Length: 158
Image (cartoon, rainbow, N blue to C red):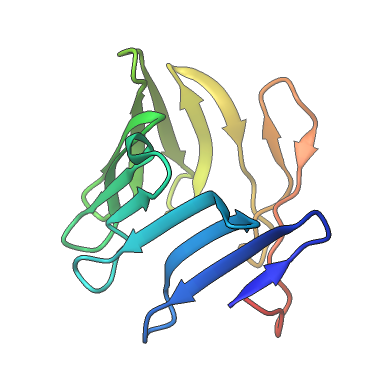
């Protein structure tokens, strides 16, 4: 399955019997521009993305027993996710390949399981509000204009 573009690139994807992408690539002529193999070792969660062009660009993902993303390693470094006792994400640590670590802490709105704000290194970086129906309202990143989160309308493909 694939798409051909006017610039000569051909995008292709292959799927397993459960409809999950297990291969993705881009070719120009016979040359691979992108070649990825996606593996689901537990039959549920994406565990590895192997790069067929540059093996050093592999990505690996680990999950909790509740199937929540816990750790990743990839060219960008390592991401570790931590949750509270009921499964809400509490904070995330990112360690770059050079060893620098940053932490994002997720603060919940009182009495809810909704994220109210994110702090990076103790400084607020984003805040979130919700309308009466529980939908996320425009968000504000520290020092920027509000951004609006959107959802797909009913019946939208994908």
